[in-house]
Image 1 (cartoon, protein in one colour):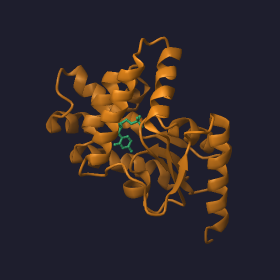
Image 2 (cartoon, rainbow, N blue to C red):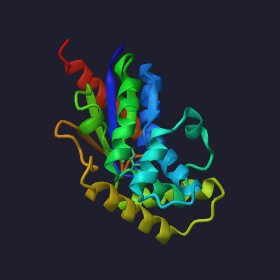
Image 3 (cartoon, rainbow, N blue to C red):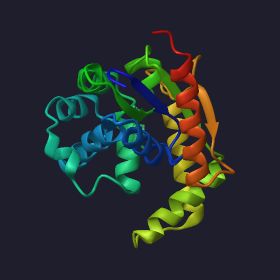
Length: 213
Ligand code: DC
């Protein structure tokens, strides 16, 4: 499995993280949640009292990111979600985070999840999965997740925020969310976590089995 890169892309709350983490553990590969990088940049900009759409502030935050920033406990939640999506639309922020992501996967291989792993970060990845689910199902899962963490949430508002983030991530000019031409799409709307994992693993094994030496 040395050097194998597996790209897992898809919209917000599609279950990419859970799937990608499990694939990595099963295949013995390192795992990187690239959304965390954008979340940490957004959070730093918010901490400075600035607007996450401010390109200069956001680029400065991206260039000075440290591993500790990724360990923060406040990277998930509605504010962090929207700040991450806003800084992710800024080309200089994406450029600043590219080398780190490529270096992470280059030597030992890795499973990376995000929005543009198969299209921009690793266009040569051995396997590309595009994991998706209906917006209603993604909102339902995110609502249950928030409730499980004891966060007060309103179901209609959670769905509205996911729709906003989908639109922002898919319509930005730079590295928009879209499946790579050679990605395998996995729609998890009707699948539980176990079935989704089994389907993803079968797709990965199918692709790796057919890969040229
Ligand atoms: O996967 P996530 O929900 O944690 O990602 C947070 C935001 O970061 C998401 O709205 C879009 C952005 N993102 C991105 O643009 N490219 C990536 N590779 C990963 C995340």
